[in-house]
Image 1 (cartoon, rainbow, N blue to C red):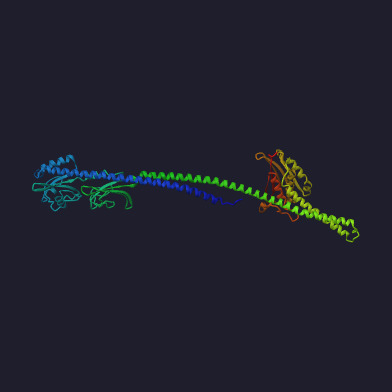
Image 2: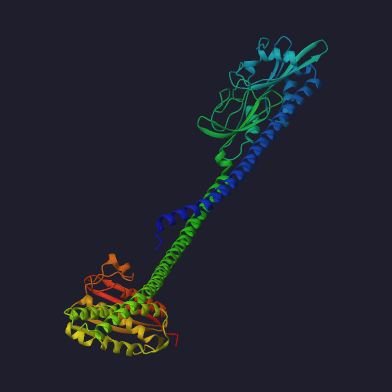
Length: 553
């Protein structure tokens, strides 16, 4: 039987199947997830950017409206009118009617003197002079000025919008303070999700609005420095061990920077859910692939083992058949080559004997020795002829005759030949014949020869005292007649079990066996379309089973 490492084949086959199945599955799963993740991330970034641009527009609009309102008031009212605080209070009330974003209003002359003021900080601000304040000079130079948040005289964070008015030969400034809560509310509308944040920083990276996640006015925000941003910038960035989406965009009016900060885990939760679902489906796919590979490999290996066994049996039968064919050719050749010289020797021996009888050699003192010598030559020539006859008979018997054979009757007659010998050797022959064995078509004499051969071997194995059980049976399903000859001998060693049908192989003493019995029996049964099986246990005995086809009648 062909020796294979089936365990190694099992692993190789499984690993190969799983590798070439799992690799495309993982490649497709990872590719789909990666593509979906990239597309979704781009959508999220685009959404953050759009939100930031919308808020920027709203903030720019807020400042534009306030500046336009101040310019309108300044150009529609005279310095004398607005420096009248009663009148200025009316104007301020009208402004408050339209918007609660103003905290106070004041008029400053070109010398920086606060000439009129309406608001909650009258006692502090009414008498101050802004001539040395940075914002005063900025307004005088630029005409319109929106400040960063600063503490000022009121020692509170605030920012102002100031408009320079030129009236005849005089210039003055209209200044308002903006309610910080108003601008905070506008910025907070940019929050996305429960952990998103939005705030404004100035060019010094100081907070101009209150962030959602901590921080106060004029403090440094807890995020990367976007104070130098001039064009819109959106990115996924890891800051202090936390990865977040950031979007920074410059506000047109006063060069502030609006910053949006979002938690990727929250915004990308759908893609994370998809990631887990993809991983689960991939895991299920792997289970199916591995299970399928194991099942199909088990089936494949089982079929391979069965095929190897069948091939081994066929190979053994072919090998045995070839041996017997070679043996028959050799026997015929030997018999042919020996018969001719034997015939010449026999003829010459007879001629010498006739001469001895015809001539007066009888008077010779060696006559008796001559006569005995010639008789011995004829005797041994005859013995040699019988040997060659048997060899020729062996060769001719390779082609069996076809006749009706009652298997039970054939066995009964054959065992009868050996009854006396069995009694002499104190061996009991037990007959256990089945009644349903049909009459088969076979060669009666050759079957008898095989049975006698197996019985003689059983006698030799037992030597003295034992039993031989001859039984028959009929396998109806396979349509085969079974003949079993079991002895109580010592059994056949496993080491020589595969050699017992080889020509000239014998375990008997020299002169007691030729080693041809089992090989000839094997050849005969094979020619008859059957087979011989042997089962032996050392110390218990041996069973030879002849299987004959029963469907050739």
